[in-house]
Length: 206
Image (cartoon, rainbow, N blue to C red; front, side, top):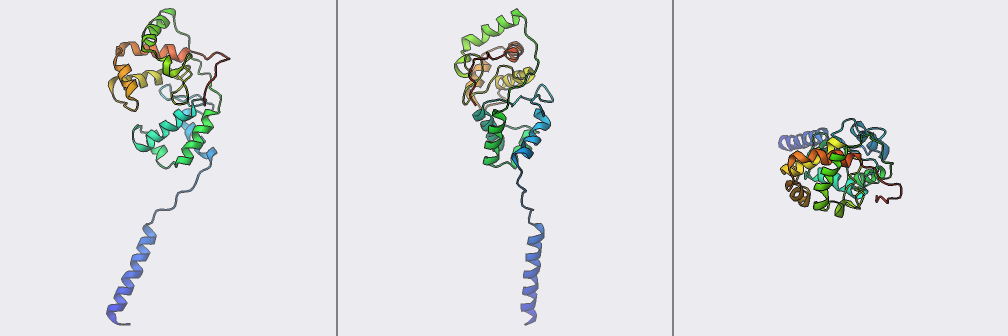
C-alpha cells in the first residue's frame, strides 16, 4: 500500500468513526401509559389540571384533541410546555392519546355556580352569536368542536381573549366572533360556561 493510499484509507476510517459517534441515538418508543403519564404532569393524574389556565382533557371530544395535538406539532399553536411535548410524538401516538383521554370520565372541577345577573349577561352575548350552533345545545361540543361546559374558567377566558386579540388564529370563525364582543365581557362568558353541567341524558361525542 502506498503512502497516499494509506492516508486516504486512514481518513476514511476516521470519517466513519466520527459519523458513528455523532449519530443521534434512536428514539425509544414509549407506551401509551408512559405518554399519558407525561400529560398528567400538567393535566392532572385524576383529570383535574394543576392550574386553572390549563384545560381539562379528560372526556374531551377525540377529534378536537387530535386536531390540537396536530396544531402544536405543525407549529400552528405554540406553547412553551406543549410544543416540546408533542415534538417527538408520531401521528399514531397522537391518535392513541386522543382516543385514550376522550374515553375518560369528565372530572368534577368543582367550579361555583354563577349569579343570575352573570347568567343573563352571558346568555345575552352567546345567544345572538348562535354559539350553540357549533358547540351544541348544552355546549357539549361535537366531533370537531370542543366541549365548553364545565371547562376550566380561566382557560376559557384566556382562550377567548386570545381569539379576541388575534393571538390565536387556528379557527378564523372564532377570531371573528370573539372580536365582535367586548373584551370586558369575556370573563362573564368564562364563568358561565365553566359552571354548566351536562344533563344526564345528553349525548357527548368522542
